[in-house]
Length: 350
Image 1: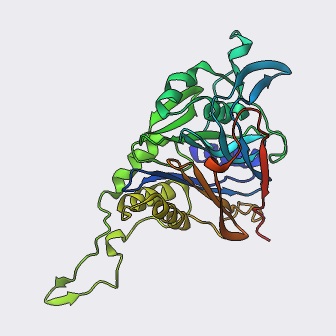
Image 2 (image 1 turned 135 degrees about the vertical axis):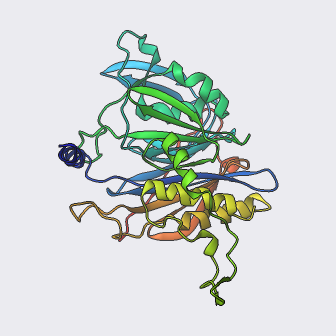
Image 3 (image 1 turned 30 degrees about the horizontal axis):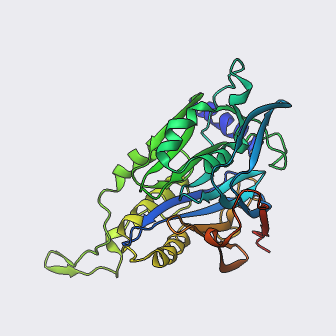
């Protein structure tokens, strides 16, 4: 009976979410004190992504049910990759970085209909609100509960009737990391001691799962003698023998956490950017090797980004162009009144 229940649950889920995107988010610190975040975006539907630079002083009016909700004027300039009219991956001039990741286990809180309209925030505006108004992880923790979030289907996503299941990872240049999840109808905020986030299950489960891999080490094993016969290792890497190599979220979480830990710490921010792209290579998904149960929805890495949070530089590459491109927020026009800069990027695999 229980087996039948779970079979029906999976069928129901797949009927409404034809693909289960896989994303990976992490942060590393260079010896010079710079913080570097990295992120890959995997999706089974081609996303029309734009790189955007938003100036200080931008006026934003959030909406819900054809009404005006929360409104604000951005204190900080920010930049990042935007699709479905929301910031999927971005950072602001104070070094606060965030990423939206797919979270299939989500159960959103209901909209508090009795709350004041000026507290209602369309969830697609939440990342703009965070980047435009807060400079640190602690500020986000202190203020996020002010928002009465409104969740709804997003046009252009799947059949247009899907409310995307998300959680949010944040990092700042003080070395603090945060995860915002929506579990069991509640907003939950977790400190993130490892600085890594993937998809499901929930973040506390991912931390618990790390206990299965406490034996992993970057140091190789030496020869062993069995019945006077010396058994030699097959080569380097034996300390990580058994590390999960598939692309499921728990495996990517374990792999990135360990690689991030064992990485030889880069000396400078520039070296940190290079190291972050190498870490991203370990979770990169080629087109066609991860497919939905219908054998037609291909989950693949459409783009990868690295943010030098300390020096306000943003780097990205796409599936069909591995040349790393960048912007330097220090060189952009970000004073109040400056226009929003928009640059389309192409993640098409063909």
